[in-house]
Length: 185
Image (cartoon, rainbow, N blue to C red; front, side, top):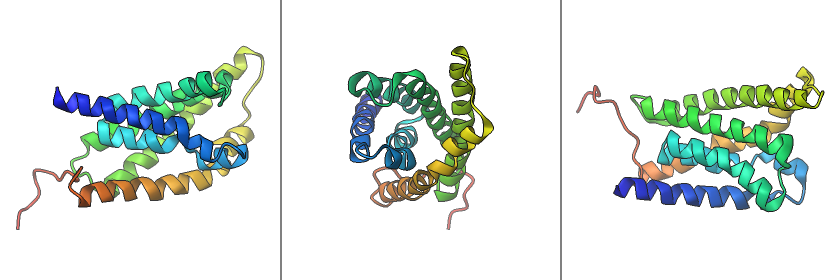
């Protein structure tokens, strides 16, 4: 019970963080699209609280932000982002939880798998949503939106998230887990 209250509280904090972080880049939408500020609390929530909390928070975040602040636009952007961010949280949190070693290498593997899966899910959902209105998602737009424009945000995520996790490990707030098969000295 105590752990679930802690996770719910942390999830709410990450949701609030996801709501306000885009304000720091929101004045210039191109920078916000490049830095992907809502992704940071999604990854951290999944890693710290678990994939269940992270995926739920990640799905709600863009929808709630769209309803409260009008950004991102609800259709199709926030809808597609809800599935994308939930995929990031699910894949990262699940793989990291199941990893016999929770270390930097495992963290990078989980994040990179999640980034690839989330972008594929975004493309599929976006293609479906655009198809409803007779539009289409071209391969060029998919690559541009999911990769080329996102490189600064991807780099920022691959630097900041492991840095936070290492800091949590070093302060013993959230130590890395090691395999029970580890040889003791």
